[in-house]
Amino acid sequence: MSEKKRIYLCLAHMSDEGLEQKYIKEAFDTNWVVPLGPNVNGFEKDLEEFVNSSNLNDDLNLNKRVVALSAGTAAVHLALIACGVQPGDEVCVQSFTFCASSHPITYLGATPVFIDSEKDTWNMDPELLEEAIKDRIAKTGKKPKAIIPVALYGMPYRIDRIMEIANRYGIPVIEDAAEGFGSRWKGQVLGTFGKYGVLSFNGNKMITTSGGGALITNNEDEWREIMMYATQYRESYPYYQHEKIGYNYRMSNICAGIGRGQMTVANDHIAHHKHVQALYEELLKNVPGVHVHTQPATGKYDSNYWLCTITVDPEVKIKGQENAYKTIIQGAVGGAAGVIHVADSATTDCQPNDNVEALRVFMDAAGIEARPVWKPMHKQPVYKNCPAYTNGVSEEIFKVGMCLPAGPYVKDEDVKYIVESIKNAII
Image 1 (cartoon, helix red, strand yellow):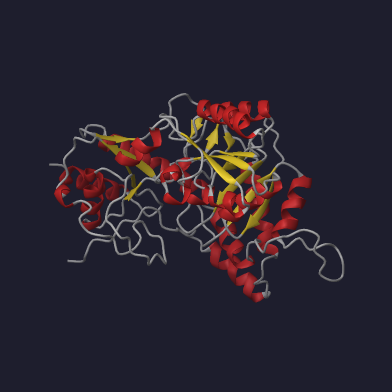
Image 2 (spheres, rainbow, N blue to C red):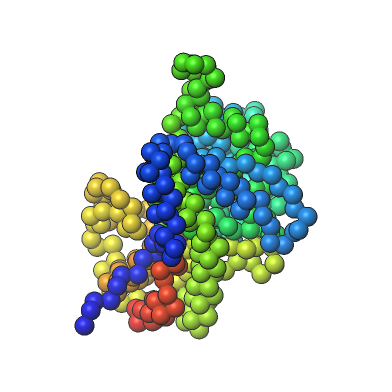
């Protein structure tokens, strides 16, 4: 009897027609293997068509431009530069996120100001955001240079309220939609509301280019400026002339070829994730103490459900819970590569509850990749001295939250097996 396959959170999934290989072969056949070329241009056009579309508002007339880059992190970095962020400045950023949302702020010598989450979406709390802006102005004499909300696990943020606050104070918004490719607010694609929008095409995202990202801009002038920064800011002379510091951030023509093929299945991938989410909601609705996180039922939210998430009540008892955090992890949990530093202790002052860690271990033994939700940035040691405006929401979710597989390779029978494993784990 063959061993059951391991079920991963979100594996890269190529088009059935093999279009990714077709575009890559064209790049090799024409020797376009550098960070420019027909695939880069074609991928950017495909992305522009996608982000400028609406599924609710036929009158929406967007004309966004897109720059394909080497990573979503690069997109955040360049957006911050374009917003004029300099050493000594402050940037308001969602605390409940992956570090790529905040690290680029520090690249520029600026300081992240972390904003906690609201309960419904787990994303940036607009009321705390305004409180932070007022307080930073009072304490520093100047307003933050940018605001970065994040579409956590694909869930749309309260972009209407965030934009209203941002516009009132004259602060540009950089939408981190790295996890929210194809998620929408009132039919409009995330990343198209603010001054800039960030996308990611890492290997486990909704679509992939192996590694890569993109920056959405408002107009041609912004697009040209970002393009200059992404190509080492070379001026238009017959020799290399640099009047500003730029970066080697353009996407490779090979990676863009993968992206062109992926765009043909992007809507299928989004539909699949939503289907898996609905299945989890149905199969887990009667499991005591386990709750599937869902989008607010207002009709405005349209999450791609990049990863499906649950919370586990503290009183739920899990098999093996008595052994939680007894062993130091010898590498990364959740698929990150190249992590070799071994921790000094198995515990920290902010970590998931014992039953959540026990459930992760139980699922791992059952061949299921499950992962804790992101640890809030304001609780990360590297950011311990940064300002933070908190309400306890993200810390509480971190204690009880878990991500479940949702990618295109996750079949209905896999979801049923995952749910049965969760039930079997509960004492």
